[in-house]
Amino acid sequence: MWESDSQAARCPDWRALSALADLDVAVLHAACRRRRFTKGEVVFHEGDPGGAFHLLDKGRVSVHISTPLGEVAIVDVLQAGDTFGEQALVDGVGQRTATVSALDRVETLTLDAAAFDELRRSHPGVDRFLLMVMAGRLRATTQQLLESMYLPGDTRVLRCICRLATVFSSASIPLTQAEIASMTGVTRSTANRLLRQAQADGLITVSRAHLDIVNAAGLRKRAGLRTPST
Image (tube, rainbow, N blue to C red):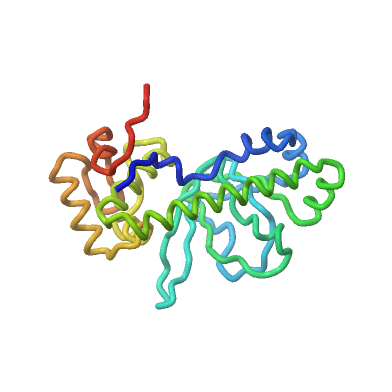
């Protein structure tokens, strides 16, 4: 098992990327339209026509896809600073490849193709910005693929919990055991067994609709992650 921090699989904050791309955040804000979503509201559905690129400004969203067996699986949870839907600006056609739903009160800044084209004429840094967003997405996807291929299921489950604690900025994670299972590519029964074992070891407590971290340092050590420096 290799050691890596759970944040390694996260895309960089879009505000930081804007600065690195020499694109003034204020200029980016001005080109975007702010949209607000209530808890449980769908931002867009899988299969919808490609639309705007979303910069997540406040709140958290879940990302779901349909499996070949017709089931719906949650594959990620995104937080403020993340982005989604950038493919709409790249190919300009096609369909949404996932369903995105608000987990709490959410605000996004949306950049559609027309606004993007207008922005790039006066601010070429927006091209670098989009490339950096996509590069970050590729790195995150590669890291997740490596973990799914080479890490055992128990380690994937524990790392997922560690990452979600960062996403929710809390020791309490409002996701079900079934959702944890789908995010880590294990069966629900396997996830239940692993979570119950972690509870027996004093690392977490498990409830029907959420779980709480009791021993964060112990959980990270069991997951093979570095303890953040203080």
